[in-house]
Length: 355
Image (cartoon, rainbow, N blue to C red; front, side):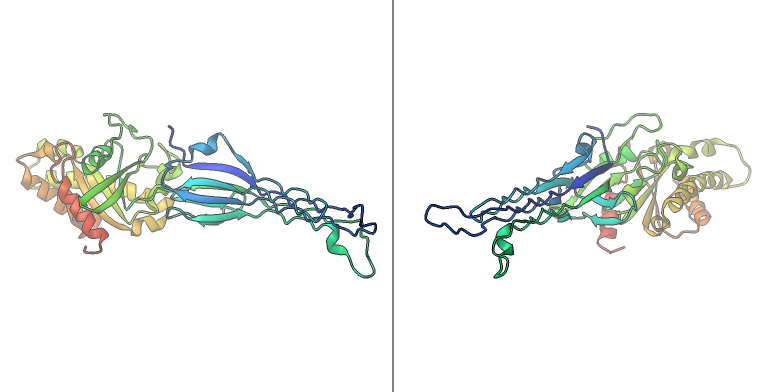
């Protein structure tokens, strides 16, 4: 199944049924009065959020939804049947906007939320309603009122507590597979991950949180480069961002000759800081609020530097100085699992407000 996170649809409520013009005609009632019944109400259109759906795939094939019209009234004061309502199920995390103005009409952030989108038209009154002392045989009835209609944009924003961001090949997919039971596609080429992956991280019994791996972030993403900013919306709801940096960029600096002590580590830190700032720039260009979220910086592929703890300590020290941050920077290895459990627990503490 393709991951579909946006769709445009048109919805229409049912029209009200027309009232009836009728007069009572019975053998022993020679002077029967008006007995036309009212028309039925048009059906409404509701949206309901459910955890049973993960994409907006269904809306690729059906884009028009119309509730049933109300039925005609009939004689002997019988009201017409109301039109049946429509219940449209959507994934939790869906934002519904008016297509033309982009105004947010409803944001489904919890399961089983229900929203009346358009209301059916009222049924018309039958001629029995218009009888008076001076107008005893009305030959008119009301038509049913038209139902409301709307053109809508549906936009799915994944509900995750933590968002993993970083350049392609930094190891986000491998990390989420280590932290959770998620099984993303993993390969050694850019843009292996073409859709966001969700994983549930279990800390202890009945204690867990959701992590999302966000693909497609490269320099120029906010202007459409790479996968563009299509998936950036999925980190708008996250509480915490984990910025994953590829430690493989440090390899060339471990062997490059230089007379100045610690210079190699400084050059390596400069390279990581450049990559870090590029991604931060793209986040700010898309939505400045993203850069104010709590963030943890993680340098991946620590398994490439066994026995070089001094070099890594120098890199981290210079990196923090370069990005002007006192936030702790953690080294880990998604491949071997080293440091992954520590990161999972740190994020859990942060989500509880302990950090």
